[in-house]
Length: 110
Length: 117
Image (cartoon, helix red, strand yellow):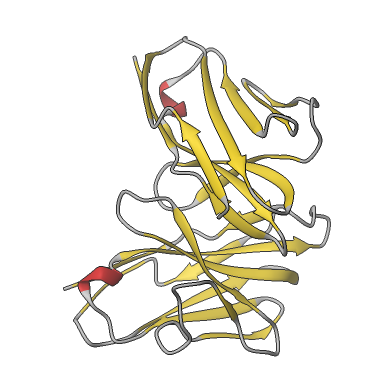
């Protein structure tokens, strides 16, 4: 059965800290891995990773994929209270089916 | 990314009734999907909405409970039938494979929060 596991499930840090969120996966027909930020209802697209070892970067956020070890990390540097959200990792399997992890609830305290 | 709208944004329904949720995209897209997010849970794919043919449902979801229409490449509806309190969730449509976008990238609509009394 396809599986995506995120860790930690919950994380509380202070503003300015750097955080690393983890995502490991086991799927039969991997196509790519996606990261989303969910604040209220709609997940907002952050990154799509297809190739190993190539870092994707957007401002203070960055992500990388390791297809040999079957995991990805999402880094957020110099965190701000606006980064507080649930971060979702999803793997595209087969015909564009997304398999989601449980999410990491990140809380940034001022 | 595509501009995706969903209606209604939220609703409160009585047990036994049905709710139809609309998803509209501002440009043609190849793929449209419907997801459910139960309280405190992650997202689960309900079905892939296929243009001009029957939707493809995931294990545990059936057409009688979740009928889906997709009459064209920019619009889809999901109906949640014979509502029970267990159907209280956020329902989200997502799209992929549109013009200028990576085939595997998926973008989500704003979601519909359904509460069943």
